[in-house]
Image (tube, protein in one colour):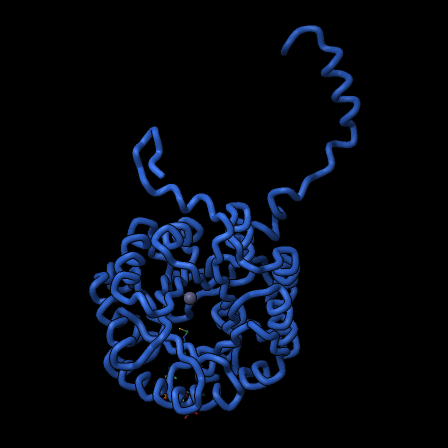
Length: 337
Ligand code: COA
Ligand code: ZN
């Protein structure tokens, strides 16, 4: 509908009208991977179970990477094997190579999340390979997953910019995605803003171009709130037709190989905001917030979450103890102050 004041046609994003948005939790992977403390395995399992109970549609449980590279997730097998499997939730795991894929399939991952970067510098820093080497390796991983009957998602890091190279041309992103879809048979792709360089105009344009290029492929957007643009980017992507978002409990997270990286967009903040606007996420905000409130005790520091700090919008506070006195005094005043 056109606004009578501006003639601007893009109002639909402000009103969800029951539209379904799928929230995918990455806190136990993207979140915990950078924490210097090792969160005990039984606490990780309890956290994943709490996230399942809160109704998230997908949970990236852990990563099957080198335990030397990411010691925080060295218990990946045990966590994935021992969590409760809630029907309807997809339990995913990040996998960088064949070795990781074999481990993840053995541990009964529902989905392998394969990762490479749109930026050569970031791919070399993060995965120690050129992009072409990564692509060749991931194609083998995808073939193994297909044989094992396990779903595959392709995540493209630095799709909105690289902390070492700067802007990444949208065409580079679309070209890699075309190879994922056509040469690797990918049914699902995630565009990752690994270090929080995305901004709403860019997000809207890239999301729209991506959807026009790959109408039959499932798209997820993965934003970090590094520069405070997280929620604005989510809404820009929704406006361009996206309906799947990664987010992390408490807003924790960040890539260990990306300078200046900070947490993902915060799950409870996004669920809270989308709920107010009439979107349907299927997530129980109270349960999600309760799980987030337990994080500082697990990781030993405060978390970015504004919802844990302030509560939801209608978490009302008692008036001051002398409220009646204040009211009586105000009513007794004869002239305005
Ligand atoms: N699971 C367990 N161990 C693995 C592994 C996997 N998926 N992949 C490699 N390893 C081990 C190898 O066995 C080897 O161990 P060793 O030193 O005891 O012999 C060691 O890791 C190095 O293996 P190599 O094949 O030489 O890999 P590399 O040094 O080139 O590292 C990665 C490549 C990608 C496996 C490694 O850097 C990694 O896991 N990085 C983590 C990336 C990440 O999680 N980033 C954040 C998310 S985007
Ligand atoms: Zn990330």
